[in-house]
Image (cartoon, rainbow, N blue to C red; front, top):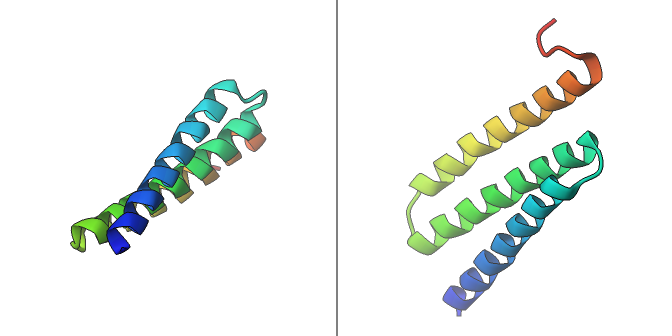
Length: 89
């Protein structure tokens, strides 16, 4: 039963990533694209974590934590660049 739930979750998050990619390409403004990119990072973290549960290894959990840190930093950097024009003051 857990295998079915994991496959269903993998399919749902895979579909969400495809929708996010479409939104990144077709979004009207840069703010919408940044938000879609952040949502894509969150969905990718969930996808990596679920895959780690399915494979029963802890390596994917560490990878998802690293991806979460870099995703947060990239979102903040993009937003600061759009608002101020520079990243480092």
